[in-house]
Image 1 (cartoon, rainbow, N blue to C red):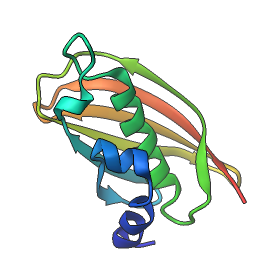
Image 2 (image 1 turned 135 degrees about the horizontal axis):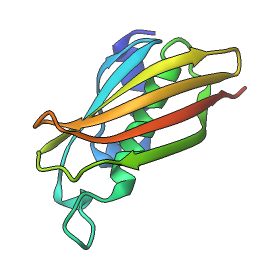
Image 3 (image 1 turned 45 degrees about the vertical axis):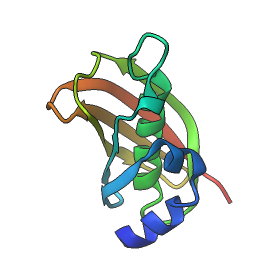
Image 4 (image 1 turned 120 degrees about the horizontal axis):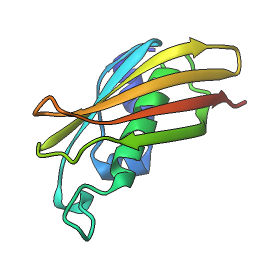
Length: 129
C-alpha cells in the first residue's frame, strides 16, 4: 500500500485526526508519525497528557501493521514515560519486531523535536477479518 493510500485510509481515524497525527513515512517494517503539540494536548498540570503519547504510539503501530493489508487493530499496548517534553512536536517511530499471520509486534520510540526521547512503547497488533 502506498503512503497516500495509508494516509487516505487513516484520514477516517477520527481520534488520530482530532489529535493532529500525520503520517511521515510508512512501510511494512516501520513508520514515522508526528503531531504538533497544541493547547488541547495539555493536562491540568500544563504538561502533555499521557494519553497523547499513547495515542501517537498506537497510531504509529497501526500504520506500519496495516501497511500491507488493512486488517490489524491493537490487542495490547504499554508505554513508559521517560521525560517531559520541552519541544513543540512529538515524533513516534514504530518498528516491527515480528510479523506473523495474526499478530504484529511493534516497538515505538517517541522523541520530541529537541531530539529528546520522551517515551517508549510496545504494541501487539491483531489481525481482524
